[in-house]
Length: 157
Image 1: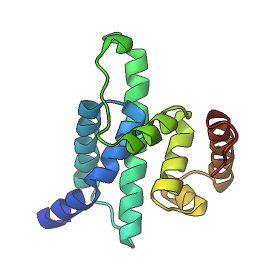
Image 2: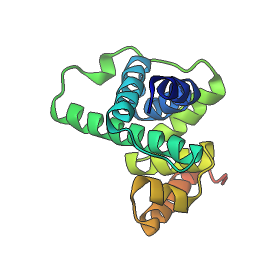
Image 3: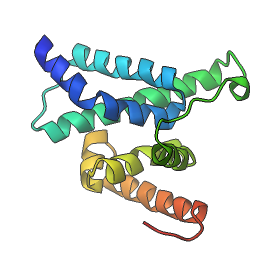
């Protein structure tokens, strides 16, 4: 992968990766750092993709995995009280509502919901891209929908 290809991928997918990271981390600055880390991993690993859809999927899965790892590390190594940090907000109120709903889901369900609802991946594609069993992805999707239904007061979809 040459420099131009990396720049093209960054221009095309940085916003998507940022939104994924923000759903996990809830902080603009942490999400920006995570985007940089995801693209550094892309540069280091130099994966080959069969389609642009696979490129986007790889970046989303990598972002989810990085954020989960970061959150686990922070849980084991706390440095500050997160309740006392200033809140970051989204620029668009509908984006903020979606981010809030995703934040209410368990970490393992967020990836499935984001990739399926926001990016249009099928559950089979999510399983293939994330290296997760299809039945596990379907279970997470079912659980997330049930949880969102309860949060939204019975409204489904």
